[in-house]
Amino acid sequence: MSSRSDDRHDEADVRAMTAPHQADFPYDRDEEAQVTRREFCNFLGLTSAALFVGAAGFSAAAAIEAQQVSVFMPTKIEGAETLAPGASLNFRYPEKESAILVRSLDGSYHAFGQKCTHLSCPVYFERGNQRLECPCHEGAFNAETGAVLYGPPPRSLDTVKLELRGSEVWAVGREPGEKNL
Amino acid sequence: MRASRGRTAVAQARLVLLLMINAAQLWILAATVEAALAHHFSALVPLIVASGICFFITLTIIFWWRPASRRYTSTGYLKK
Image (cartoon, rainbow over the protein chains, first blue to last red):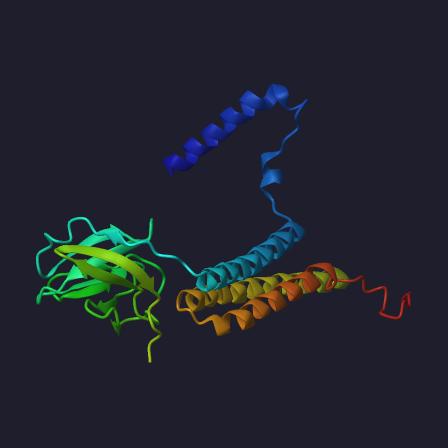
C-alpha cells in the first residue's frame, strides 16, 4: 500500500518537474502506455519473422558446420600423465572447443567433447558413478565410450581421438558421436 | 453498434490466430534446435518449411485478412 502511494508521489514529482516543458514537448504518459491492436499485430508479425529467421539460420549454421572438413592438429594434453585413475581433466581441443579427459579405473584414457548432445550444456565427470552427467536435463553418458546411458541426449558425445606418446597423452582428432539406436 | 461489435470480434480472432501461430513457431524453433544438435539433418528442411508457412499465414492475416465495413459486400454492392 505504501509503495503504491510512493509511486503516486513519484509520478506527481515527475509531472511537476516536466510541466514547464510540456508546451514544447507534449507527452501524455497514459496515452503513451497504450498499445493499439494494430501495433500489437505488427509486433506479432515481427516475432513470427524473427522465429522463422532464427529457425532457418540455426539450421543453416548447423548444416554448414557439419559439412566442413576440419583439420586437427595434434595437441599435447597438459597434466594428463599425472591424472589419477578415476579422475577427469578439462582441456580445449581443437582450439577453443571444450573437452574432457577421463582416466578410467583401469588406467586407460578416454576423451570427449564436453557439450551435451541434447542442448549443449557442459557435461561433467561424476566420480562416484564413473560416468559423464549433464546437469541441465539429467542425461548421462558412458565415461569409456561416450554412449548415452539415459536421459534426453539423442546421440553419443563427440569423441576426441587420443594417442599415447611415451607417458604423454596427445589429442589427434575429433569425431561426432553416433546417433542412438 | 452491431457492426462495431462484429469488427471487434474479427480483430480479436486475428489476434488469437497470430498468437497461436507464434506459439507454434516457437515450438518449431525448439524442435529445430534439438534436431540440429542431434544431427538429424533430414528433419531440418521440413521444420524450416513449416516455420515459413506459419510466417506466410501471419503475413496474410496482417495484410489481407482485415475486418471490412459491413456496408460493402465482396461484390462491391453498397447496402443502404
